[in-house]
Image 1 (cartoon, one colour):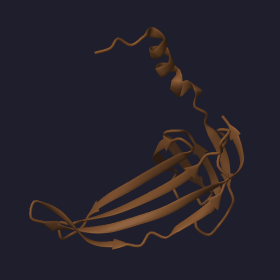
Image 2 (tube, helix red, strand yellow):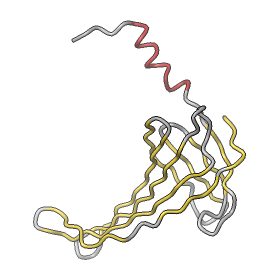
Image 3 (cartoon, one colour):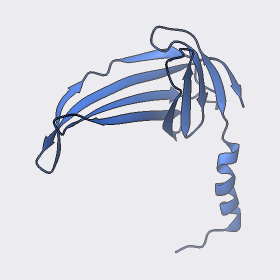
Length: 140
């Protein structure tokens, strides 16, 4: 095993401290209701202006100029199967490291049936995508 130089350890530990947090406005539309979104390298938080919607926190993985963010719910059904509902958001960062102008969303869902010693997918539903703008982004 190769020893790690002390400087490399400092760079690895300091990495998250240099990550920027962006807070952007989401204009009103019939899907999102408007609100704001907080974007980081490892998470996204969407807060809708609609009072009946709770804030959504999604885990993100950033690779280069793209972040993929996801949240999912698993619900069991009365026949021993399960339903999965997932929200996937794609964020295309600007080359200079700035925030995106648009975010693409896809909402996936599938039903699984109890099958022998596991589950088998019974039905998957189409996941139409849509894009919404983000404006007025500022670093926190």
